Image 1 (cartoon, rainbow, N blue to C red):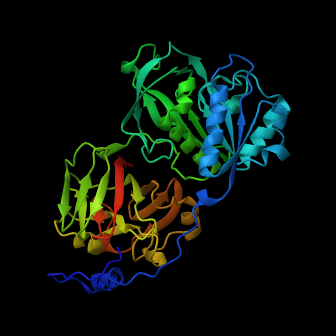
Image 2 (image 1 turned 135 degrees about the vertical axis):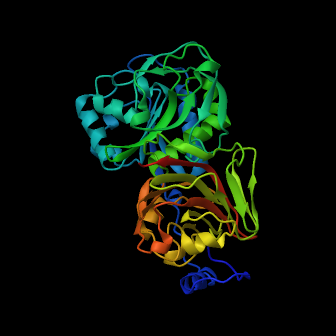
Image 3 (image 1 turned 30 degrees about the horizontal axis):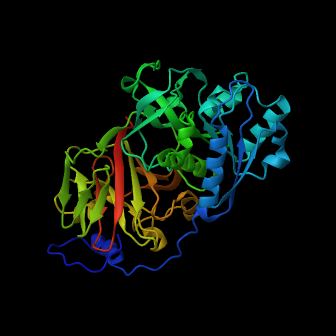
Length: 449
């Protein structure tokens, strides 16, 4: 919440004055952490088949090679299972199982791949990767689900459930495309984080009872896993939207992009791109709502707060993105403040979880603003750079306030000030000033009691 001076026409306590002395301070220009995606990455594409063989494998390999050339990661391709040794796999940040089928690895090779994932390796499964290694239970957990059946190739609609993940952030709320739509033997939702799900009413042949995940991610056995059920057809690999989807999954699996891939169930949307019912603007400035379901800060020094109800013991999640290449935009999420049309009530009686990568430690991204710095090493490792989406979980239980960035705990603060009790309060988003542009998506909440 660092800013230039603004006049105030009301009095405040000495404690608030001390806090606002920091609010109005000129920021130090702390160095922006080097984004992980700038580091060289290496990917192995594995396309061995022991069952049905897709004629789109050459197009898939070519697409991944082109993505690597365009985005700075190297790509090797093989159908030789002898590549699966600890020494050879250690060269790669992720392995793409591209349209594999059947039993493609022997037991020794399976153990090598398990060790590779256990040391932090990445896995990307494309389409028939779910039609692979049915007798290897560990692999079934890594992929997330096994193939059951499919109807004829036809158009269908996917609902995009997570628009913060790099594999789906470029998409709208729905994605219409033609492909071969798999039914799965189990639903991965309880163990993996679902990114996109098929609308079974939009096509014929879906058998999963209306909850039909098609793309998901997870942390698994020490590594990172991304799976997409799309990608059967040759045309998929020339489709810019699918290529971006695949690129985002690869970037997550290699560690070049961060995301919250913990399972997510039971959340209620507060803002889902369909109007601002229940929200109120306090103070100057505004939030601009775009057709793609994004809220962007505009001017002022105010706050958009959810006035429909207050919360106690809850998990608040929201996706956010800084616009400035220099990382000097400023915003934040407020929690635990009383109802008021004065945005400064949130400063004086609540807590702000800061978004601003260029300030001092206790006032930078992930901090409980003015009170406690984030764990900066954990924050830097979890943070995506300006221009890319991040996800906050702000978990309030009693007087304990925890902040997760892209699924990583970066701050754990306990309130001891009765005037700032977190037991009940409202939540809000800050619009900071004319020079600051921060975007938000998918604000949602889940009660914890």
